[in-house]
View 1 (cartoon, rainbow, N blue to C red):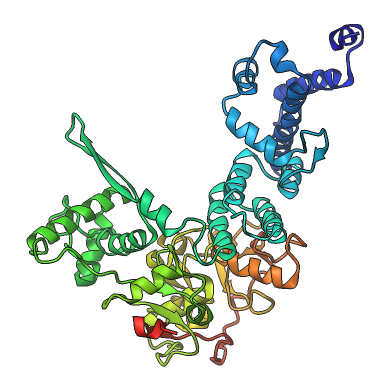
View 2 (view 1 turned 120 degrees about the horizontal axis):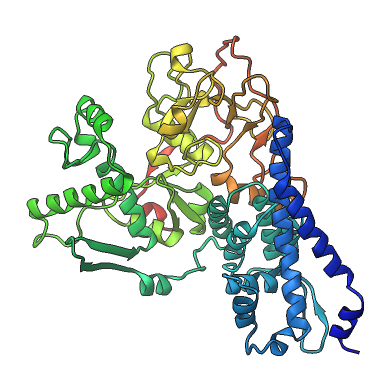
Length: 526
């Protein structure tokens, strides 16, 4: 008796369950929600998204059922992919097949079941905590782990990424994964020099009807880092604006501060348009400056690279620029060989004052570099990925206008949008420096509520700490364990110091203090 005959005589349980599901969806679609409370509306919205994600994972099993039962051939399709596209109307068959291979058990040629390749990611999706976009971002990271990495370390990375996925967005997972991969392969072997040289390119497309040309490029790490530095200086708001005759031209440091501020307030360009205008200004400076014919090297890089003293001595690890770019140690050493390359190595203590009290409102260079070393350098607001080269320095304990001090232990990086959201009104942020625990000394952000809603937890931006936390977890054998206070969750206990109490702490040396040094090629020789 065939399966079809059985199905005709008695409806199987799975068919009945999906029939009930259809009926339930019809009821949910027609339900009136006007009587539901605010918290109930939020709760059912969360429940809905969780159910959709769970069904997405269950759907993979249904596809496997079709494959294992020989449905593809019986339906007249030569390939499983054709069946998915034509019969089931699936628009991403390649993605589904990769998900099945990575997240469901498979069978060997001998008929033995092979365990799931990434069980923790599969469980997170099965729980409804993550969706297809999270899974794709995680798999893209895990697929880049070299085969030479020990099995137990690769498994630990899978557990860590699954934990990250439960708390972060897909784009954030990509950034977290980049830092985790840098820890797994500190010498930059994921893409060796030969591969980077092969892929590098800058292509200028044909002019279209409007005489515009498309510029596409794949840049190696050094070129990307230098481009970030140039655009930060030449494409800043208000700079090199051809539509504003009073806009300062050239380098940011050469501009009059007042004129630049006024020009920035008038600047309505998008970031892409500012980058374009900066490129135009740079090319004009090259042509007008007599560079062509006298030098093919152009302007030398001027980078701030964060790297530990131990990594520098061992010639192993990665450096991170103030713009957020990651450089293999070989590139760091190559940059140091240039006469005008400027590397900042953080170790020991700096002689420049770090505690300015009320003497100055703006942070000095040493404080900015200290903050870069402590917090990763970017915007300290949760989930923000703005790099150090594009942030302002925020008085995280008490605002300057409220009597705050310009001491490094009370400062934090903040991009302009987040800095402008600090305040006392609902929806704005209150900030403070965490006083105790593993996050002591780091800035935390807490969104204000109206008083009718529960108090929200204070949160820390974990993006730039991913490799550091993963290394610590490996040492402590806590990878994949409880997530509280980990890099997978950015919540921290407490709500910050009471704002009606102002007491200046006695400046103390930071336990793992840092200094800023100018490094040359001779300093890097064994």
